[in-house]
Amino acid sequence: MKIQDNIVALATPSGAGAISVIRISGKDAVSITEPLFRSIRQKKLSEQKSHTIHLGHIIDPSTGSGQADKTLDEVLVSIFKAPNSYTGENVVEVSCHGSPFIQQEIIQLFLRNGCRMADAGEFTLRAFLNGKLDLSQAEAVADLIASDNEASHQIAMQQMRGGFSSEIKKLREELLNFASLIELELDFAEEDVEFADRTQFNALLEKIQLVLKRLIDSFAVGNVIKNGIPVAIVGEPNVGKSTLLNALLNEERAIVSDIAGTTRDTIEDEINIGGIGFRFIDTAGIRDTKDVVESIGIKKTFEKIEQSQVTVMLFDAKEFKIQGSRLKVEIEKIKNRFPQKPLVIIANKVDLLSEEEISNLKSQIPNVHLLSAKTGQGVEELTNKLLEFVNTGALRNNETIVTNSRHYDSLLKALSEIDKVKEGLANGISGDLLAIDIRQALYHFGEITGEISSDDLLGNIFANFCIGK
Image: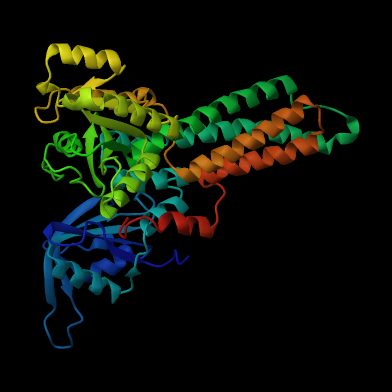
């Protein structure tokens, strides 16, 4: 890794805008910028304090001998001196006008004067390498940028503030203390002494097991919050699936017509309900058909149910008298094929039924939800029902929720090693064998926070960042 280089990149989104920010980081960031910046008050950047902002012009002095320097833009230059900066190095941020031409002119100027283009995530990588963030916090930066709802934002903020890291570090420190005592016992093996209290050690292992299991269990919630909860809307053709999707999205996203089988492919869109992202998938209707194209759509329906977290089954309430028995068969078919998947059964078009018909319907289909996608009746109740499938209690209580699959994998491995240590302790195995499993558990804890890392691991993590962050 070329971490001694001075790097430059656009820190704001590419394209035209009101302003753009170009970030430079490295030992020579200030000295490289100084000859390229002309302060309106003739200040020398190298003499200015950290965390100060200066108005002036970026100029290109390389236009040729005898020619006047070329002014590229009027800018604000912000200075952050090491170690009090995001990366822990000297950092300069140039706020210029948001023209793509100006952005590139200024970046090219710095590239000609001692900088290279930053790699993806290299600013945050340097923050990690310089001890400004641990690895878990650094990964949370990418999650924060990608967050598109309140819940995912809240989880990323908690992780970036070190909530997850502090839990792991505390467990690691406590385990490390006992590991040191057991290692010490090995030095006095001939004396047959015990420095580590086995009862206390067993209690610690039980505590670590509980914390790890809680964190591992939280991944099920964290993963769907981070990536959005897929909900498949299924049912026979022309029961109002597309109308429901439009009602949920509050826009004409799906084609609606009286012709059965209008939706011949899946249509997806996302909405935010109670701070949680839901991805609704309107699928082709389920029925026997000779239409080859529609048959492909029906096959995709079952694929989408497999991929979804929740299934919403819609049927036409006014057709219940005729199709009720067949509907019950279809409901059982989905329940039997996907027994672990929540199924919400909805009677649509209830605005066309009498009170007696509604009463009869409710008696034959337990827990049915009454809805009119056309008028909006029952839509709010449906969204509330969907929220019940997301365990947001931990989120409301500000508990640590794991969303990163790499962390999840390390937690599983750490728990496996802790289980081995506890089993070995119960069976009275020797301290040297206990120490091996303890070291492995400590290794997996260290993988999460970055106390143990490799160039390959860091490369994989930061390759997913945007350039300029």
